[in-house]
Length: 211
Image 1 (cartoon, one colour):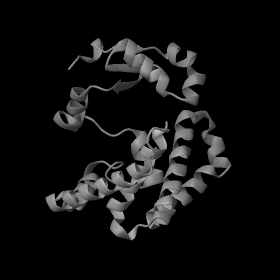
Image 2 (cartoon, rainbow, N blue to C red; image 1 turned 180 degrees about the vertical axis):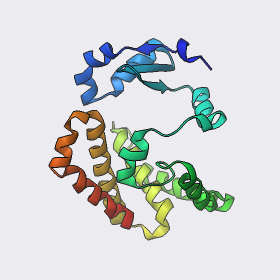
Image 3 (cartoon, rainbow, N blue to C red; image 1 turned 90 degrees about the vertical axis):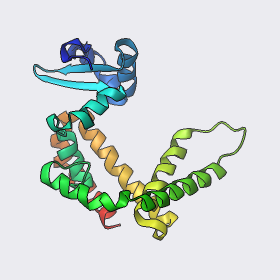
């Protein structure tokens, strides 16, 4: 594990220089930094704010497992994401997190995991049958659809039909797009509130909770 002072830094000037590109799609900017600086780097924003990016498994293990007590979830999770998906395991901290973790513990029983694997396998086979051989395809929508097939059927078992899955997917993706807009364009926060866009999407995603 490298010490903080040894981690390469991307200066604020570089972030500002590529701001328009990042606004459209931040992934090429970060990928370029990974290729130039290695598996871990930090982005300097302002005088005190530093954002760390890493694709190093050992780094993730250190933060999430070995030294997790010294780290907390960011505002992006506990507030920005939470308002769309609720206060669950992903977005909560402290005692509420521990209660949520205890609540879902039975889902990780061996028999439950075996059933989940069957669900995943069936979803994969179903998607595989839809792919035409020797034809170039865009893999993203296929994997995206596979994700929702797996998640919804794992949560709701056989009670979920294709119409339910499509509805859940549409609501989840709409909330995701709105959250990304907020994060990429924080200077428009006042407009998102004044125009009612945030309120509209929160109400929309609540339909998924009742789903």
